[in-house]
Length: 354
Image (cartoon, rainbow, N blue to C red):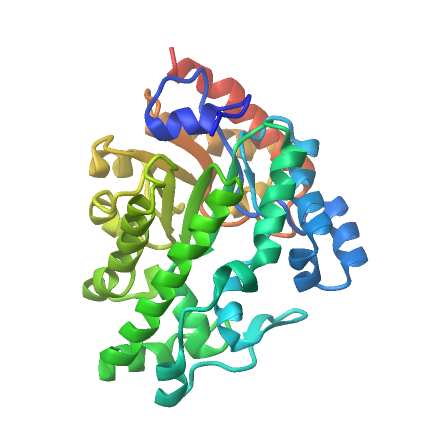
């Protein structure tokens, strides 16, 4: 696969020299953009926005058209597509987020869980990737993604997000055989899902472990990290060893040294970990991505500039930093504040790449 015209992020993932710190923003295609809200209204529902190739392509490109300083695009989709393909019946309630019609509430439903025909069930995702690649015209790299097995399992068992995870944690402690069955099936499904995204044109893949930080210290490896390692290993065995892979455990800064041995090319970090400390923990073995608190974008240009510069200062000189937020941008962010952030990162970071 030929590198896109702007290959700064790909170079950073490989540890190669760049002239500035590249940046993109988690959830950069989202509700804070008026053009996104207009397209979402035309689509009629969030799922239709994801499943319609034209709509998914349009919203993926919207932030790039508004912010030429973005160094990557990310597929517009949802992390819960894989459980939906398994027959759990994904739906969205306005103001409440995603839910499943058929959560895994008993042993019988768990034992029936099987790897779906990913290529057929999620063809709309791969069609979107192919369409976005054509529309990008080699402008920037395209990031494909999935939720981590643990994060997907939390939704599959709890039936929705925003819970205290008591149901799945009870299962993990009292019936580890059941939780590991879910995780193994989900791991194989995610491996296939990401491989097919790469086949369709994704230049980078990222695994979002949004709820890994909810785990106890001694449970993070067996229930989350080890399964992400298997996905990376599977992708490498399938011939995708040259496709960069990013893992991001929100709330997982205490486990960065363990994550550094996962086989990933980059680790996402949230704002609760100082990026300079994180760099010392991983000893420049791999790239770090992050890590500004998204709420700073609700403030003033002066505060945004100061926060961005502090993160770049904390990381210091070197080629293995992708600037990003520590989680997704909020819907209340003024769009002009994103421009302020991107301009600050681009101009200020050049001095660290001489």
